[in-house]
Image (cartoon, rainbow, N blue to C red; front, side):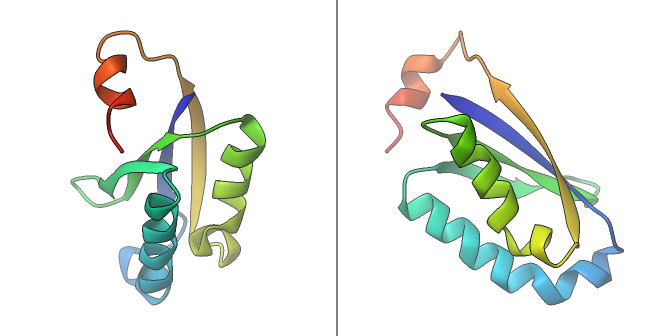
Amino acid sequence: MYAIAIIRYRRSLEGAEDARDEHRKYLLDLKKKGLLIASGPFEPHFGGALLLRIPDLETLDRIRDEDPFTKLKVAQYELQIWNVKTGKDDLDGIG
């Protein structure tokens, strides 16, 4: 199952800076676990997005809830299950 997480800052960009290192470490851990496929900021930089491969909805909620950005109330998540049709085989092949 795939999901997209849109992350929008609740504070100014400068206000999010204090939590950025912890957030990035968290994302690297998700990548190592095979849950995160790709991530990055939007331009202009008001937040960013995560492309996720998840086994269930509980994991998706846990990814949001355990992010330092969420814990420190720096950003909010919008979570969308993504029913990939075109390119699914390509995504499935990403390790």
